[in-house]
Length: 480
Image (spheres, rainbow, N blue to C red):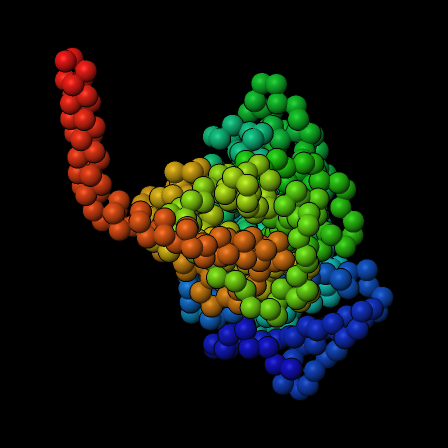
């Protein structure tokens, strides 16, 4: 059927193909023309498991439109042809000139770039199938997209050189621009398959450079810089480490990627890493003796009090080294993973949520469940203050009010679903907050300590005076 997520055609920009998986072993690419449809079948392709890269749904985009749009660098076709700009006027809008400068700084010849274009063109059916909502400017020629993807892959790879292996004034991309590459490369609509990054690495390696310093020439080589070119796994690991909202988690070296994994975009590796860490370990202590919940997606989720309400009920908050959410009933301690919230974190979380929503059969909705859990805890500035003081949130946005508003927007227009483990913790906290003596304690704290602290101080002072008067009377009697 028709795909509506790509937007309406504007001028010469029309939808020129739709891609669908006809069967598990057959890939069907449909090119829409006025004369009819041309069907290209690729049977038994080893790339038939490659994921399809969708655009963010319009309703989800309303919560924070800027979180899904690139600042400077557009990667892939979705933002390479702005619908409100003529084709010949958009060249400088997506950093295309900076991409060409990067290829020039890496001393790549036209022959090497042509070889890279050709290798990407060999993957045309698979790439067309992935970008299912692509608007390519009204032409069925794959060549322009291949050239765009080639420069995109070179730029993404070159950004890794800029941070660690070259001095900042010598790198193909200067440090601030490399930061923008890092930020823009993790957007859902800005994804390219990592197999294109592998092709770019091979092209750079064939240039005769054996170390990142060689890419700038012998005269600019940093003393002692003899590290080899990074592998594809190193590039993926570099992006995941610097884009993760949980910078304290230890990242291990990735094993060699299989052909199927090479069709994944960068965002999928970050999603898998964060999702795996947020998934509760089946051998956790608090899991023992707990009955499993049969259907977490159908049963009604328990309500979760805010951080302030839980704090009044005697619950304490502590950061944990693991990624799962746990509640220690013996000590009344809620353990949450430590997260750093910055402008980059906001964009990453929005796009991780959008990416998880595009997965047809995720094992667990871990990102949505985690964000929803904290959304229940955070209602206003007081809740943010409790979580920051306990070390769970490192706020780099500025004010607590800004963070509270930002987090409350994350779950807007998102279907909230909770994992089994998080639902169990929510049920424990909900039951704890409903205990009578805890409700009395919370009411006492709110009424007599927060609203009228002077009253308690007056009572305490009166009791001290009474005790002192009593002691004075006793000593006076004993003196006689």
